[in-house]
Image (tube, rainbow, N blue to C red; front, side, top):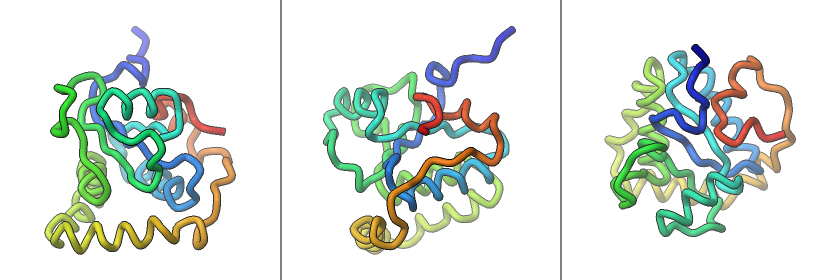
Length: 152
């Protein structure tokens, strides 16, 4: 029996800025700690990311925020289907388990403080980390976790 195609598997998907150096480094870190392979990924700029954003009434050009889609194949179409910014990051970390669950404790920091820091880093991320230059993944099997295919 063949495995379920990544795009049609239920479960969480992290939408991230595919051209951001920091965002891509964060995705690679999540790939390393998610030993169960639960979390999947798509770029905000990609076809499926854009379709999901449009279907849920979110801005199609706001690449400064990550979006954690709680269940790619399910949901009601409302705001309970996703988490933004630091709430999304905390949920992504929790989904990874292990050390990710420990790091997800950042939720206990008040949201205005977390999201304020997130906004500052978001504004500076290209100056500090630059634009992402695609490179091979550490493990080729990780490419299957990208619903639009690994961006190259």
